Image (cartoon, rainbow, N blue to C red):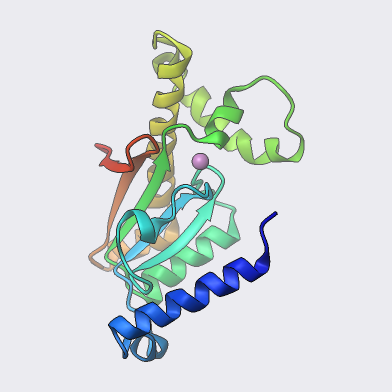
Length: 194
Ligand code: CO
């Protein structure tokens, strides 16, 4: 069984190592954060944004939820976007999904998942809007992959239609939105053409 002690011990040796390599790292970062990126990703434990992009604490402002959704009534997500755009002035927003996403997979199933179906319905909506495209795929595996990609497309679209992004673009703030997909099999990110 995992112990909280393991996390604390691991943290302590990490902090010591970072401090040895760069004695001013924590004191500088404690003063302020100036991340250039906002990352909207999936909660999946296998996709920690800072690790997979080989970046450091302070580089990426983050919002993660099941299947990287940008929902127009989600105050949590919208608040993160608002703060990132208006206060932190991030330059790029990355919506990152991944192949093999459990949330996307569950949305394709007929079975009842209980409460979480309220969340998964957003991905079911993506399926409905791209019904023809999805039905023209040869097999379930390809359909699953395609839906993982389409889901990212839709969330990028949702994001660009928020009042926050509209206002930023209207006031000529230099901010771009990108859709990326992560492959669990090889650890690589790929940019989607959106
Ligand atoms: Co996922």
